[in-house]
Amino acid sequence: MFGADKGTTDPLDGKKMAVGIVQARFNESITDALFEACRAELLALGVAEKNITHVKVPGALEVPVALQALAERDDFDALIALGCIIRGETYHFELVANESGAGVTRLSLDYQIPIANAILTTENLEQAIARQVDKGRDAARVAVEMAHVLEQIA
Image: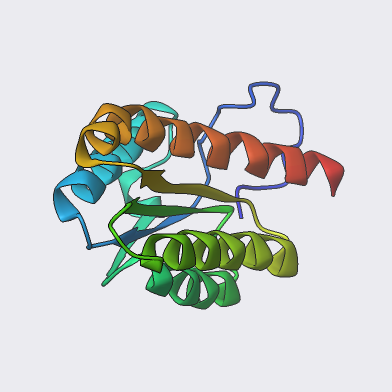
C-alpha cells in the first residue's frame, strides 16, 4: 500500500497510492466524463498513472462485484465506483440506485477499504451532464483523503 510513512500531513497527497476505478458503461457518455475527470484529479493529486487500475462493467448493478474482485486483491489503498442512473418511467431506477449503492457501502465496510461512490442518480440527462465533471473530481479527492484517514487510524 502507500507506505509506512504516517507523517504525511496533506490529506490529498496521492503519491505512493494505488487506486482502482470501476466504471459502468451504461450512459457511457456520462460515465466516460466521470472517469476522465476522476483520472485527471487523481493524477493532479500525485497518484501515478501506473497505480490507477480502470475496469469497465456493463452497468451500475455490476459495479459492486468488480469492486469486490479488486478489494480481494488487497493491492489498493482506495477504490472508486463510477456510474450513472437516470430515472425512467418504471421502478427500475429505484432498484438499481438502491442496490448498487448498498453494494458499494457493504463492500467498503466488509473490506475496510475506502470506496468513493460516484454513481450518479439523477432525474434526467441534463442533471447528469451538470454533475459529471465535479462528481468525478470529488470521487478522486474522497478516495485519497479517506485512504489517509484509514491509514492514520490503523
